[in-house]
Length: 548
Ligand SMILES: Nc1ncnc2c1ncn2[C@@H]1O[C@H](COP(=O)(O)OP(=O)(O)OP(=O)(O)O)[C@@H](O)[C@H]1O
Ligand SMILES: [Mg+2]
Image 1 (cartoon, helix red, strand yellow):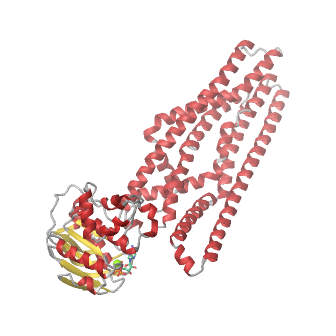
Image 2: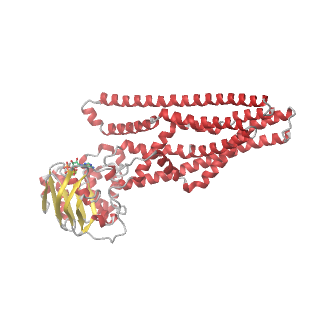
Image 3: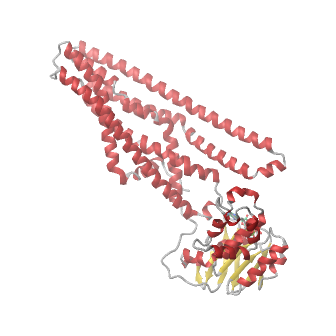
């Protein structure tokens, strides 16, 4: 993944708002007017007192009260519109971002996701995307609102005396820019570290739930619990640090505000004494500054969250911009399966060469058995035939066409692939098998299950084919899962069947039924059969020994 500068990440995150620019403008205008309405309530209060004291401010007492009521009402309505619009923008963008992240994950699958930490991926889909809500609803428009409304206040206060306008400007810059930047520097990557630690912890918990048997078997419970406790302690310490910083942030911002209030009082009093400012100007300037910190105070809390938000944005952009190992192909002429071939294929996942100048000829309606030591690249060869990965050199062809030039849907429809690890989804057994052919009839499913020697077992379950796999959880045996995987491969009905250790967990009775089914299938189907079992290999027409 490439490293991008924070400015570029921010610009790209901002770029996503483009289609909703009109809404953003509405939110900024309403937010600015709402803050001005709040800020001018005390100012008009001062107008009322000064008018009562006999100062002529060219506005009647009645008019001042009408304005006060108007400001109070307008503030609520405007704030409501601003909040609603900002959240509309944020949640619309979150939906778009989530959709794009899922599309990207789908594209990167399986090659680029094989080695990734699953806890981290879940944190990306959940907390990283949610953190963007802070950016779109509580960062962009508050910054624009603060700039606009405080500029107006500077001009207003400056209209009494330029020096007072400058004092206000410095106060706003301090609270809205300098303090958040300092706090952001101090808090550094704490927010992001918290996110990473939660991601690691989710991964750790998943791993432990899955591996609970191993933990019990080797009596590692205490060690595992200690590790989890250590992780939660670290997380609490970091969270505590962030909370302390938020407290400091609040305290520093408030002290800063008090200091500038005092500076304003001293400056305006001095100007009044020197005759450069009227009494009314002095009172109004002080009250205007004191009541106008709202928009910049809203920014002061950004210091603790900004780095985390940028880091989340960076991770999401990384996934969105990551190039898949293999691009989906479309727009080519669809072909029919005739034969498959690996021609002088070399391949490595990283540095180590897994296949080196490997060739194999797979003829139509034959069963090719593949043997070889564990780790020699048998599963890898099947993944290359599926084009989950691209070869480094040489070619994989189907019907004499390079798989790189075959439409991906065409390729998937020609191939039934059963890997070493059958994944079941939380659904009925029937739907778990039907996913191999969405329009399959119940009869077709039963037929596939008979071929895979799993039909009799399914019939013994309380609800037969409608039994929920979720309810059974891990109570399905390895062999039962494997036969469900096989039933899927049979149901898919593709002319080219790739089976990775389909019988490794089966007893010889079930193996015999399956081998018989396979032999019958191979009258009009081509099968690549990876297996260590000599008994399974007996049905193959040719056997290839892979060496490493
Ligand atoms: N995604 C991956 N990234 C890096 N290395 C990998 C990846 N997948 C597999 N390998 C490595 O490639 C080598 C070949 O793996 P492969 O799964 O093809 O072996 P195999 O012949 O199927 O072994 P087995 O008989 O144990 O199933 C192994 O050393 C494995 O560790
Ligand atoms: Mg394997």
